[in-house]
Structure formats: structure tokens, C-alpha cells
Length: 427
Image 1 (cartoon, rainbow, N blue to C red):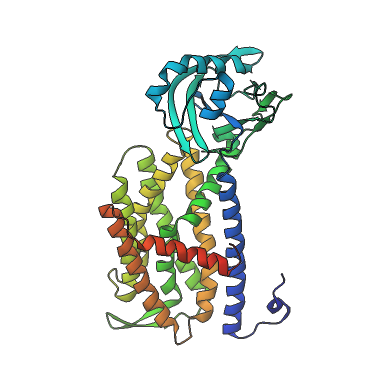
Image 2: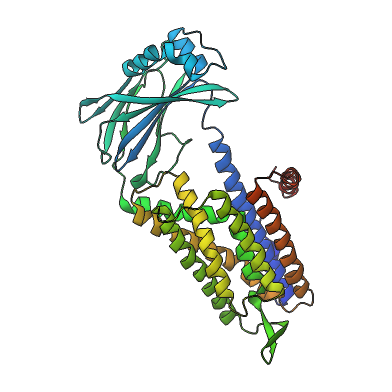
């Protein structure tokens, strides 16, 4: 839908603010739709009538996992497995199961057969049933450009069954921590295919890390609120009488104020880049609850500085100091993605660059709106009460994270979010 405001000249500051606001809401709407679409695809990572072969290509070697449900194993081998059976209960059946895998999954590299060296098993319990996950090592170089795969499981018993080959990790292909998107889908009569990895490159992996950094800053609400705490006063300056800061007054020039907030955000990037690198390399290692608690606290202190300056006029010091804690939070993200030592320099550089791009995008979206409304009499109230709200959110999160609590307010927030999505037509 074309916004009618785009057909008219926007002259007044308030009208310009409304125009920017509508465009921002359209952008947010588009972003949420894309995020929900991604989420809905991720929820389909496991389905009935599907078996899975995961391959993870690391510098140090190749690992994999075979996943089948109890029901499918019963159909394939008439085992009589029942829901609720533990790994100990499965021990008498494991030899037959693994032998079946070796007979039905044929892997070849340069016309030479590859043997799956099974290492351990675990259970994945989902609503549709329990999956047995059998992990293995594979003697094939991570630089392999093509692997021939025969994945002939259950087609003789269930003609409509599907076998999915999923690349879980391949840095040079830009694939990290993938659980849902298959590389190959095999059906009856088409159970032998080739996995083509020739399109891999350092640049592709690096660009994926940039996207990962952008994505993380956009879904990290605590990081976004910290940026909001820094951005709210960016279009105002404290009036000074002698050495004392008194009331706020709006800035005059867009360019100088915009560059000022960008410099603050860059200090934030510098700080979190330092601790992210140190944490990723194992030089520092603080407990996750402590890091997340300090990140929550940083939002409140940055917001409190807007009400009563505790750092003078050195907002860059706020970004620098608390950016150190945010960096350790980012490190946990890389750890969850399995990036522990592999192409670490390129991963850190790309991720940090992505975070900076994501931050600048947020500022570029928010700052023009704030600048247009800065002279409105009510903006000082927005600055004051917005900062108070950020302080309350900060204290709430800090208490939850520091003491391991789970307040009922989370349920109300979830309901409010669903209602908001319904209002804007996304649910």
C-alpha cells in the first residue's frame, strides 16, 4: 500500500515526524513478518515421516548425526520401542540400529567409501515423538567439495517417507547452527544424490558472520534498549551555568548531533569488540547469569544518567564502560553457534562489523524522528518518563537474571505482545 503522505510536500516538523514514523512502522512490520516467517520455518525442523542426516564441516574434521523417531525405527526393524524408553532401555537394540544405518546410508568421497564412526547417542523429545540421535565422526577433509550420499531408509516400508540431508555447520558456505533448512531431500526412487560444497569461500563465511551480527542486534531487546537510552538525549544538550548542568535544551544542527550519537555507538562497538574477542579466545570467562545481569543493569544506569548526570557530559564513557559487558554477552552467542576456534579472526571481525551495521541502522531509523520532535514541549517528558521506564525494565531484568527468578509478568508481556501483533495485522 502506498502511503498518501508520500504524494504531498511535508513541510511542518510534526508532519515530517508523522511521515517518518509511518515509514518506520512499515519497516518494523516488514521486519517482523520476515522474522516470523523465519521462525515458522525453524519450527518445521522436525516433522513426521522424515529421517535426518546432519553433516557438520569443521576445520578439525567432519561430524554428523542420524535422527529417527521411535515409530520409524519400529517400522524399519520391528523393535517394539515405546515412548518413554531411556537410552539405557535402548542399549539392547543399538547394535541392530547402527548396523541398519551403516547398511542404508552410503557416503562416498572421490569414489571411496566413508565409514561412519558412531560415538554417542542422545534422545530428542518432541511433541510428534522421540528422536534417537546417533552421532558419528567421518574421515573426510572439511575442504571436500562433493560428497555422494545414498540415504535409503524406510522407503521399502513407507513409500512416502522422506530422508533429509542437512548441513548443520559449514563456515565457508555461510552455514552456522542450521537445524531446519535441508540441502538434499531424498524420496523413494531418488535416494542417491550428491552434496555440492564447491560454492564455499572465506568471503561467504565472512558475509554470513556480518548477517549474524546484524540479526543478533536486531533481536537482542536488551541491546536495543541500551541504544535507546543513549539515543533519547542525543537531540538535546544540557544547559550549563558555570560548572553546573541544569535543564535540557534542543540541539540546533542535525549533522553535529547525528555524528555525536554515531561516535557514542562506535565507542560501544569498540568496547564490546574487546571483551567479545577476549571471551571468545577464553581469556576471560564470567558466569552467564552475571554477564546478563550486568547487561540489564547497564540499561538502567544509562537511563539514570539521562535524568541525573553521573558521568558528566561524557556519554561516550557510558557506552565504552557498559559495552564491555555486552561484548561478553555476544561471546555466548558465538559459543552457541559452535564457533570455538574455527576461522575465529574472520568470525569476530564479521560479527562485530554486523553488530555495528545493525546499531547504525537503528540509530538512522530513530534519530531523524527524535530530531524532528525535539522542540516539542512534551519531548522533555518523553526523555524523562522514557528513561524512568527503562530503569524499571532494567531493574526487573536484573532481579530475574541475578537471582534466577521467573516473574509472572513475563506471561502478561507475552500476551501483550500477541495482542499488539493482532492489532497491526500480524496474528
